[in-house]
Length: 282
Image (cartoon, rainbow, N blue to C red; front, side, top):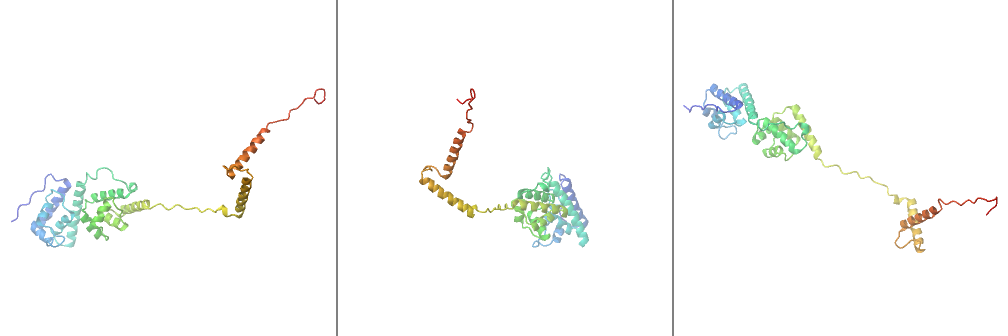
C-alpha cells in the first residue's frame, strides 16, 4: 500500500486549487496509484513520460504544473477511449489556463496596448508577451512544440527574440504564435495588420526624385550672347573703361548708377520764368 495522498494546499489560489481537486478526482475515479499513472504515461525514454513524484506534485496545489504534465495526467487517469480522453484533456486544459491567468494577474494589471497603438518591434514584442501570459505563460519549449503542431515551428531561441522585441516575426511565425496563444482568427487578422504597419514604417525612405533641368548654356542664342559679352569686356578693358578690380558686372552696375545720378540732377529742374515788365524782355 502506497503512502497516503497529501491534502490539497489550503493556501492555494482558488483556480489552482480547482485544478488540483480535479486531478485528484480523476485519480480517485481511476482507482490508481501515482506509480500506475506514471507507467501509463510511457517509459522514461519517451517524450511524454512523467514520474510518479511529478504527477503527485501536480495534484498538490502548491504550484502551477506545466500544461504538458497536466495533460499527461488527464490521459493516464481514466478510460482509454478517445472521446473520454479528449473530454478529460479539454477540462484539464481549461482549468489549467484559468489557474495560469490567475497566477499572471499581477503581470496583466493595467491596460495593455491596443493594436492601433503598437507601432514598433519592441511594442509588438510586449503585446505578444501579454498574449502569452493570458494563454498561461507557456514556456519557450512549449511554444516551440505548440507552433510545430500549428504547422510552422518557431524555435525557442527565435520566440525569445520575437517576444523580447528584438526582431519582427515573419507572417507564418506570427500566425503560429497567435494560434499557440489561443488567439481567434478575427483578432489574429488585426495583429497581421499591425505587422504590416510596422514593416512599412521600417522600410527605408524612397530616394528623392531628381528633377532634370535643360542646360540653357547649350542654346545657340545664349552662346552668341555670352561670346558677344566676352568680346565687349575685352575691348573695354583695353580701353581702360573697366577698372582692374572690377568684372564686367561691376562695370555695368557702375555705369547704370552714374547714368541714374546724372539724370537725377535735372529731374526736378525747371527753367525760370521771367515776367515781362512793360511787355518787353529784360
